[in-house]
Amino acid sequence: MKENTDSKIELILLNITGNDRPGVTAALSEILARYNATILDIGQADIHHTLALGILIKTDSDVSGDLMKDLLFKAYELEVNIRFSPVKEKEYSEWVSMQGKDRWIITILGRRLTSKAIAEVSREVAEQGLNIDGIKRQTGRMPLHGDDKLSKSCVQVSVRGFLKDQTAMQKRFMQIAAEQQVDISLQEDSMYRRSRRLVCFDMDSTLIGTEVIDELADRAGVGEQVREITERAMRGEIDFRESFTQRVALLKGLDESVMKDIAENLPITEGVDRMMAALKRTGYKTAILSGGFTYFGNYLKQKFGFDYVYANELEIVDGKLTGRYVGEIVDGRRKAELLKLLAQVENVNIQQTIAVGDGANDLPMLATAGLGIAFHAKPKVKATADQALSTIGLDGILYFIGFKDTQISDRKTDA
Image (cartoon, rainbow, N blue to C red; front, side):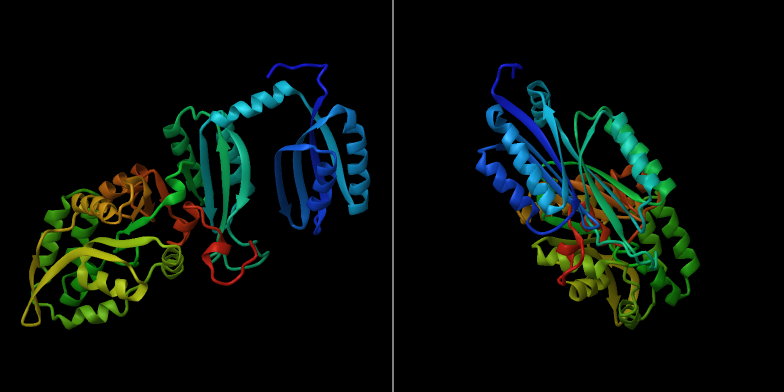
């Protein structure tokens, strides 16, 4: 748009601040309507009952003086402050040209968010040549005093621009996350991010805070041997199939009744019930894809309402474990295959899927999903996955996909 000083059109940015009260936006916009002003952009936020309202308008220069006078009188009546800033047509055209640039969503999540964490993330955003469009709080308002072990604080930052180096930015975010004890997610703000439909979970050390095979091994008196093999497998030092076969063999002779006792006392990961309630209420399909055992997966399915369970079947003869398994092993490769299969069954694009896991055998699944999240993961997994959640429970996933506290809880929360 070519700038024309003789034009009768004026572009004016209105900045309104003060104590928030009902009717402020309505009263001011009614005056704008009376003068036939065109609203080009509008945004409003409330921080601790303090209003911050911005309105960019286009109006005829013949009436702009009277318009601003009426707005000033109304602002005085409403006990708010109003400031007028002229905007050049060239500046407006440059702003409009930003519409073609990429949009990204940065989620910062932790027990507590510090100014240092926000500052470091904001600095990286600027160094990458991106502009912050908005910052929104997704969690309820933080109390002054409370138990940090149970608290949650999350903000979503919307940015726009041509990202210089996504890999470098994610690496820097990982460093900030480790230093500031927060989680930081960087996602392109695409149609798929807003329409995730299928979530697949690892079970052991993800949905539950233990490795079930270790629990079985303790009952069989071979806990130390099995844990050593388990750790080597989770670190990616030995093949999962080989480690699985070795560990199952050590369980030979264990009584079947032990599994029921273990299932009824599984340590459920923080946030599972809250997460599953929200996902089910909003129509998500959920699956357990586990290198563990179907007996325990089915127990969790019944308890929380998962739609699918795929895991390993232990062979049982005369009420005793034989030390063998039945069917194909669910390893890392098989998890990725099952994720693709379930996406086809549910008729969703693979980009609409989410995978969550903690071990090396989850990496193929995390890489296949549209959003792969390493949950309280081993260092190798965390370094490889695009997203990581390490500071709170599994309900943190809900914030990564855009939920607010008011959308997660059935009851009203102050968010």
